Length: 279
Image (cartoon, rainbow, N blue to C red; front, side, top):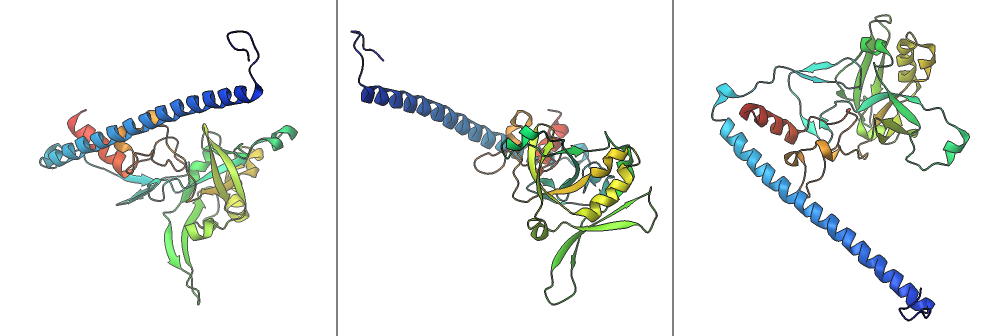
């Protein structure tokens, strides 16, 4: 660096100037992010208030309200749907909806093993590749208490397929206390996202492979995985209305293993009111 007179600036002064410029730039960036976050929070609060007012108004005239004709969940992504008479919401949307999915390993080159930890090792696998998955029925999760002194709680999903003998099925435990201890983890590619998931073991994978291999022999390498309760997968903010944001800080809702946007409680109310008022 040279001064206006052409003389060289001391190295120490150069370091100070560089640090000052970097700090100034960093402050501007942080200030911009802070202002943007504050704007998002304000917009979310306003939108929620308007939504609550519209919802309160709509309940006065039940004749014009839209009706929910049916509720379906997919305990395992891309398998047959399960019809419910009622349900609840949790942090990932409709309870028990698409917390599990089927994946296949991504072919690895020698250089890919040196890529960061967020590099996908597996890729989601659906009826787009294997139509026979439509024959597999995954039941609604049922909580049971194991017999014995420990009283361990299990959350069981039963898998069966019309392509296999009627007495051939598999039971898998998806209780959060069990799945968080599963040792085999993958980074699974789901559209443009990479999600940490846990492998549910060989028994269920072999059951699904008996079905998928009927479409293509190479599909024998399928694995069944579950999203962990600690895994964060936020929805794309481009598709998230302000009123659907969650918490005091107006954070983006979690997407689970859905294709894009889950049916969250807040988003359900948002769409319900929009339909009712044709907005």
